[in-house]
Amino acid sequence: MTTNVKRVYAWQHPAMAHVGGIVVGLLLALFLTWLGWTTQIEGRAFRCTDDTYPFVWFRENLEVHRQAGDVLGAGWTWERIKAVQDLYGYAFYFIWLLGGVSTYLLMRKGESNKLMP
Image: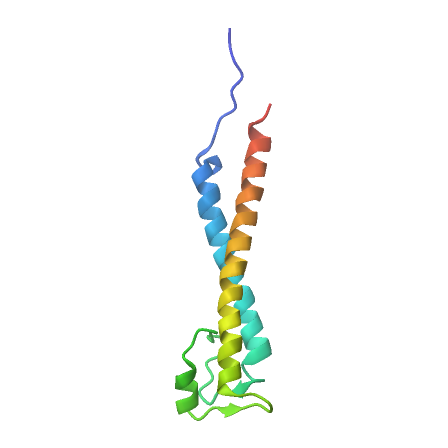
């Protein structure tokens, strides 16, 4: 009597879905928050005198920008930029969590489909 057992490859291991979810979620969060910060805040809220585009990051210390003599945009204050910066921080972790969980579930669904006869 023989049984048909499908091979389980290393990349189909459940731990790989965890790692894949963490990595994909992190990359997605990094890209989306960078894109949002560079297109919506940097350049509109303040003009950076020592611009290092594309290597800008929303978690940079605003005090460094203030001391460098960066010029504020119309209607912006450093306190308002700090509040937006905090929102970007929350969004970063939310996107990371959402992207990680979604990737994990998609990878597990794909693996279960491959393992079912």
